[in-house]
Image (cartoon, rainbow, N blue to C red; front, side, top):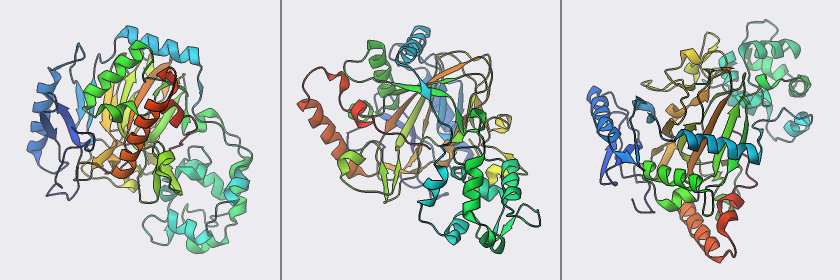
Length: 432
């Protein structure tokens, strides 16, 4: 497709009124398959039929086969995408560079930071009250994981907090508006800041590093990027100017609770990769990761699956993720209840879209069905890598970014190994 159009033009699905992304592109981009998340049973059969055809096509000298797929989550598993030697090399390069904790423990200045946020108590209540019934249910509070100061909140931890700050006098686990008004928010902040936290209590327990894949990188790193380019059928400049390869290590006990790889983009939201050239100020920022390609770099002895809790659900409702104190996003406890689980197999790639199409050939709204997480590693170590393809839903900003990157690349003297993407992302840390 041309550089100005990354997603083919798709009309809104007549039955659902939503717009959907292309599921696969193949045959040199001449033939495209689209999956509308409608009620039509035949769509799934057509989708699987074309996937069987696609699975027989060679890609970068590797014969691929799709062994499992979540049709409604636009997710596919591709065995043998990487060779054993490539997997070992990536792990070796990551170890040489050094890994850092993916999520640090909460800091002592949490209370001070929270007090700097200008938001009224009534605004907080309205934010939490999802169904606007004037009462805060436990699951309404649980959906806002940021309230936990980096910790994963459970029904038990919420009840303990209520007891500590005397927020729930009748002990029914529900806060009325009047009870919430009596709550001293400062007491809430003090309680959160005083709690000792273990790594297993955090949203994410892993270590990671970044490996450069641009011009001048190791030939294997370049080959993998080219392979991803052919897989996604996206313009080379889009892929080349995306994030470096992230390599992640999960030790025994490691996990990553269910999350989205990117966030919703509103008019007041900036993308991490284009904000430097957009010359605009924005109160919110997200990574704008249009596509995720995840690679398993080793065979895991126990656990460590990638779970998609709501893949193939016919509808999505945020509150339905938590029922009877069972949180489907909790990958330490409830991975077995997710709709789709992919077992780590060395060399396998898992591919999915994080955004829908806007119906005009560009990136649209966030795809809620792309919710996923890393299940608890019960034995051994798990190594994975992530290739994210970044696209700004604002066409003008993305085009401006591509122009600036091209100009910067042409003007930068010396070897090309340290330009564009590495510098553009060097100061970026987005906690999702």
